Amino acid sequence: MSSTYVNALRLEEMGTGEQSGTWGTKTNTNLELIGQGFSWGTRAIANASTDNITIADGASDADRSMYLKLTGGGQTCTITLLPNTSSKMWIMENATSYALTFTQGSGANAIVAAGQTKMIFADGLGSGAVVYELGAFTLNGDLTSAGTINPLGDTASGDAAAVGYTSAEGIIITGQGSTNDVTIKNDADADVLEIPTGTTNVTVVGDITAGATLNAAGDTSASDNAAIGYTSAEGLILTGQGSTNDVTIKNDADADVLVIPTGATNVDIVGVATAATFEPDGDTSASDNAAIGYTSAEGLILTGQGSTNDVTIKNDADADVLEIPTGTTNVTVVGSFTAGKVITAKTDTDTSNTGSVTLDFSANQNFVLTLTGNVTLANPSTETVGQSGVIACIQDGTGSRTLTLGTDYESVGGSGITLSSAAGATDLIPYFVVAANRVLLGAPQLAFS
View 1 (cartoon, helix red, strand yellow):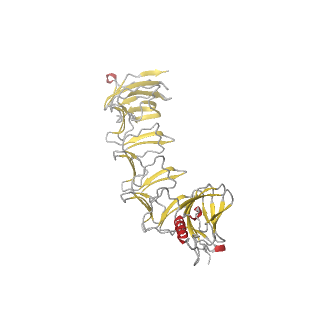
View 2 (view 1 turned 120 degrees about the horizontal axis):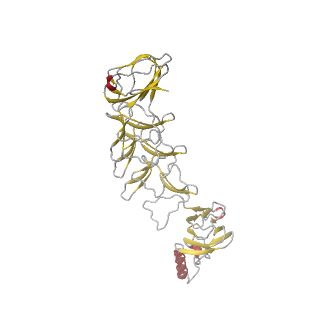
View 3 (view 1 turned 120 degrees about the vertical axis):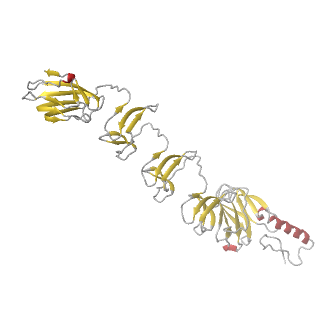
């Protein structure tokens, strides 16, 4: 019986009574070929669309090597593993620049992309032979790589813990746990990043530091405890909900800088607000402690409420410059008042006066009175010490109207005021308030014409 080579490694199997005197040599050769079957080898792939890897019968060749580095090539190539009756495992390293397809029969093939290393299996079943590639497998210990680990396939929703890759998504990490789908930990076994089970949220346990920018891509909602969002209309959105404030911005000393009280649209700035311009866009109200507002009719509005003044304007020495006493319409200028143009005092023009007339010194500085009958100036209650102005008296078409003074009005020498009597005559009386209940009247200038 002659020798055969029907085993997976194509070792010589000697027939009974054959190879007399060479069994030792033949056996040693077979042992060497077995060792070669577990070794590393290399071979060049032809620059052609097809090539063969053939395990030689009973002779040394690189194609028998377990780990086979494939070089050369020059195009995509289909490599047939021969003979098609050899059932064998190879670790194929594709060191060419093109994909290599491995076939043995009419069954399925295995493809090793350029630059990849893959474990493949030929089943050796003849014309219908199949070439398999290593799929899922389980490691009971750790997987350590001196280089990189490159996953080539997508993950699936049923994966308990998986790393995958697609050309669109890049690296994919997925899993499913009762609390988190994915948990990334540090070397102290403490959670760093969590994706809660079944959600698209990411929880970062510590701080987030960005080397460039942090870009939010979605809107916030009313239920967010603390959130940063973005919409194309609103831009950056910062929201939250706390028992005191919805939003609090602090400095590096952990002190409040800006707060938005819970459920309010107000903003409280704890320190000084500095801006190139400050443009309020709403009206103030009577309850404002200190407010700046604006309406299209009133323009800039400055209001407040204090025990002494509603509004106080101070200089850089913290000294009062201008005051509006609480609840009044008066303005007190503490220093000198210089006007670049004309200052016009408010004047009361009354075209019908007869009998008792009370002048309102809080509303007017000057008075123009047309006398339609005899007039008595009743004692006022609105004068302010230091106030001065004029009182113009105009006789009506009848004339001879007289002016009598209340006790608060004092004339020169106590002689009273005698007016021109001619119809239409105009007289001018100056006045000065020296004290409460004392309005001094100067001598009248008569009969202006």
